[in-house]
Image (cartoon, rainbow, N blue to C red; front, side, top):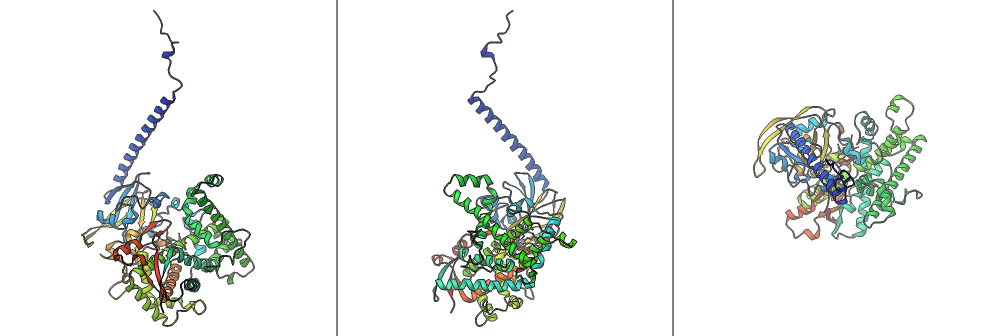
Length: 580
Ligand code: HEM
């Protein structure tokens, strides 16, 4: 009997794969892995959709709505009107006939509840033990370290306790004073370039967004820069990028900074690539320069405090942060102590939170006043009643009367609030759910004219681990709270009368509850002061090129926005003409 010829090479296993076979094996493995992952995900998503129970919706959201890619892809995805679409406002809720709708997040099969109901949102905002902070989503604002916005629990309380006392009445007086100074400084520039009462075009993003930064730098940090003068306070050794451009550039380039690993900055510096290398270089340099500027602010403030001059430092916020950093002796002070990183990061966070939000809101408000001349006329008449002659300028203003001014500028305030309702700078906030809980939503029917009927309460059960979305823009367009004309600009809705009290709980531009905006009074004061002064001096119009277009087209174009750190208006142009 002959044995098998085991030594025959044709019968040996191919221990070394040929390149073609290797490609085949890798491809097969990859396909198997993709199919397996897709099946697992599909099963997990199905299970998640069951977990959302009877809550209307039950859609799949493909992108995590609060991670870096989401705002960038927002103009294209999710598709128009779908749950998660930034521009859908209330459309998705109207589609499902419910103020709370559910979806399953594909990436991690997380049940997600989108909420546009004032009652449910009050529960969410006030119950922070159940509805937590989405800390991972705030990594983007923690480039310099941990800060108030990106912490919770005792750490957050410590940050908040240090900063909060600075946002008092005395600070609002400073805010009014510096807002007047900054706005008059701007007027001198505008008038110098546009003498007489010739009508001229203003690029609001370029020209007006500096104002809140200058006001914040002065009233919070004691840096009294002017529009043209960036160098007066510069200590030339360290910063070749002055403070204002450094802040602006850092804020604008925050997302690229977070998404780009350090080695890429180095690589693109060594190998210059057109368009990429210059942006990365500018990003890196502005963050370095801003750090140096903030350290300089801190160092000056420390000198003041240790020299016993703290009380005369007209920057309460900076003073509080620095004192909390220097705290050493008694227990109470030590409990409030801020580390160097925390203090630096809080300063950056305030520059970020207190600048773009107000700046973009002012752009939208001026655009709305250009589009609605009747509203502009009412603001003008109100301001004229307050200041029948000249409006007080930086030298003549008595800022301690700011409360009286604010009380008399109710229509101007209503215009700004209506602008915040229509274009909330922070359109949505995420809140992970820590334990099984319930919220009250409402089902309804809505006819083609937008009329709502048949409103009925229902209970949505949110399992632990799900995500609640505080849908500020959805809430602001909810007709149950704001009426059938919720899409329209109507400042009167913010004015209380004997028969109408505007729905406070349905206005979340500044959020609500313990994590609400610390700078709300600051922002309202600076914005009302800014608007009153601008309208007293100038008549605002729509850009020349749009004058022949129908109103709907003008409105559509001028109010376009994209989602960035805050809602960013993309066609912020108006005309100014000096009133005689
Ligand atoms: C129109 C202007 C403003 C709007 C619409 C606005 C809106 C908001 C919103 C919605 C939040 C909550 C964000 C979240 O939970 O993720 C917030 C938080 C905050 N805002 Fe504002 N803000 C404005 C101006 C300001 C100003 C001028 C300052 C400071 C000078 C400021 C300081 C803060 C701080 C420190 C927080 C964090 C509070 C905390 O986490 O406890 N904001 N703001």
